[in-house]
Image 1: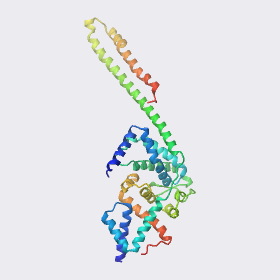
Image 2: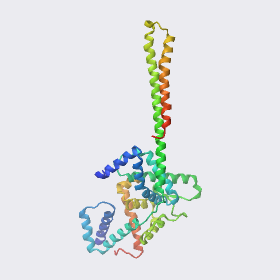
Image 3: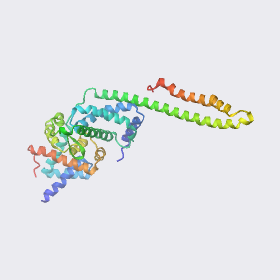
Image 4: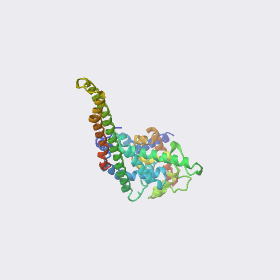
Length: 155
Length: 199
């Protein structure tokens, strides 16, 4: 009974030595023990043989599978970059458009202050802001959408 | 568990490459891991015909979620966990589509168990190239998939217990007990073959 318990303890240690890290002391303990214990020695050999057998399963990949995956990912990366560029263009357009509107509103507020000293009426100020500020800035924002289109997807 | 210096530098390089979708790094990863990924998927699903599609899908997911790999651990467990999730998603979808065919069965942890009780040839028998491996193949087919997976990740893919735990989502202590039980079951294959332990 004592021998069996002792063997059980060593066999757990043998298992652990294959699966996890064991200390140098524990490794020496196993080594010393199996010199005198045929059962545990056999156990260690069978465990090693089992693990060797597991490593002997061989898998043969499909020919060209690496090349196929590489081509797929290269294509996908190109598509993702294209979407990224498009996203950046639309983000820039949205930013430019909002700056154009906010800027025009500010310019209109400043121009309104000048109506009295410059003797302009409101309609003239509105037309001025529209023609000389809002339309040019809006056209500049639109150009952001058009310009990078030629190069989309080539980044 | 922190990585040793060179491994950490390598993991960081991979993380950077994935973040910037660097094709050179991605092609290196394919070169290094595609075979292992396909092998893992083959053993997990038990179906040769699905392997390439699943592997491709895994790589696409790697590319799309590249920013989630932080480079603080090795790349393989992250790759295998993505592959595992995709394999199980596909299995669940297929099962939902054909509930009445009884083609697939599921065991603990939702791991697909398609080889036993179906007409598919055993992936292990197909992969056995030595006498010992052939003897083990039959035992592997009978083993619960959770034990089989733990054994393969430990001894074929050389992942640590913690890495296997990360892949499967089970605690490391559970993984180690699965490995010990799996080993005991496989060892009995040789014992039954006349190699007794002399106790």
